[in-house]
Length: 556
Image (cartoon, rainbow, N blue to C red; front, side, top):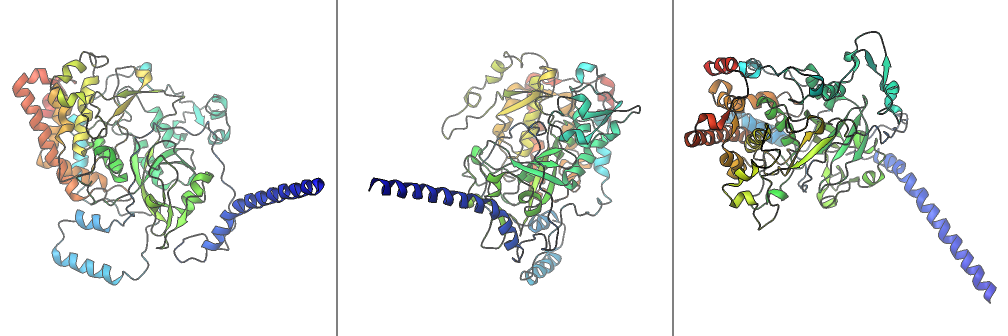
């Protein structure tokens, strides 16, 4: 009897082992089975059966994955992605009613037919002929003031121009540490051989992320929307899904997918810390930052991504891959993994498998260029009932100005620049900021994480301006540029609209958001004017460039 029980126990153990092995085999075969099954589905733009199988994508080593600062994660929306037609109709406010009605009728007639989607990287028409105001702005003396001479200590990287970038070295696990593997020596000047993301990195200095007329920035924006995506991985941390995308030229970018349409406003009952992140806000923030001549936002571009070919088929992140599914509407969806808002109820769905998103170029790897994170003195409480100290103490700025690094240098003026930038966008979520550690306290603030901007066009959040109202300090260059952008010939909304038309997924902003920026600009100028009336011009406006440039700029 005892021997019989032992035999039965052994048979049971063997059966459990066989079942476990079978399940592992089925899990490994599931991707191939789903791909074959999806070929017959009308809603899936999968590769045709006759296409030869592609080689398995290479995983980038941990040494080649440059980790970007964790953009503050926000709750995702469970609203399905919608097309850009509504925003385009809103942006074209000059069209007559008859044309709008005809367009609506055409859409209704075509409702039953499959919609043609724009292919990723598809060419777009050239900018309109009225693109002169933006070019004229950048030729204005205020946008041509020279930086102080740059010493070696003012450059983030000291680069030997007589070495050539070797992309094959990126496949080596030591390529960040071994110079001989990263570059090939040559006898000619070959910075032109560097990829655009590397040109962007080596152009960073104490005063700016990139220079005003750096051709590598426009080329990098083009790379973000046209480079082949070779690898995708989830970014760890945060309450919403973000993806790290690696390109064929070994550059990387942070992808934030579309969650709500351009015309949707943040609901009035939402707290600022539960607001949606908007991919178009990241794109618009980059263009606004450049028009203000701050140049402190890393390059960002919009891209239409094929979720099947450019995410699912190139990722080796099984946790991400397993979250893909086909919705009842026959659209490809996925939700990934994150702290709170990654579930089927908050899934990101394509139409049928294409989705918009923003791609922000990575800053240099932290192992090469360390960054320091600072708590924003005017950080909000992030609590439903409590208020921050600055909200109840009108003299709070005096305490800040006695605390390093705000007691000397230009940091308090950088905070004022960031305050103006955030107010124009309506961004209430500026809890921390970063600087490059190499430059100490005498450097600019990097304007990262702008996804919660442009949420409300019908409301101006005046609490964002509290730092400016309490401190009554502003750079003269910033003040003069704001005055310039309030003039009719350099109207901020028109300049933004023109600049944003260059993006591949334009229109980026709903027309009322553009008009709101003009309104908020007037509020900022009124706040500075009140400060000047109270404290005097010289005590409010900090002269940060030479008199000759100021005189010419004011006269114009």
